[in-house]
Amino acid sequence: QVQLVESGGGLVQPGGSLRLSCQASGSDFSRYFMGWYRQAPGKQREMVATISRGTTTNYADFVKGRFTISRDNARNSVFLQMNSLKPEDTAVYYCRRGPSVSWGTWGEYWGQGTQVTVAS
Image (cartoon, rainbow, N blue to C red; front, side, top):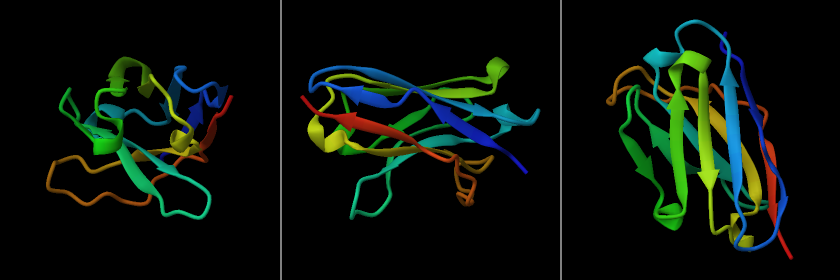
């Protein structure tokens, strides 16, 4: 069973930046798509960004141009660089392991989440 551990959340002022990290257990990290999702209070969990086994990325429209997802397969890690943060980015951010192919199903492999709060 894969374990995903997020870190890097915190309180930041509007316009600021944060970098989230997700460390995955196991030796087959590079085989899987990875993603970042978020859930704000009272709202459904939503996709923020995904990355293929290589470098192909996909972003939700509300973060395009502000957030960047990347991965380091040697370190079993995926990152989310968040710039120009807005109060509406406040949420718990979750790391998720995806399928091994682009047409595969995203299973229920989640981290515990890390809180991001954007406020002045």
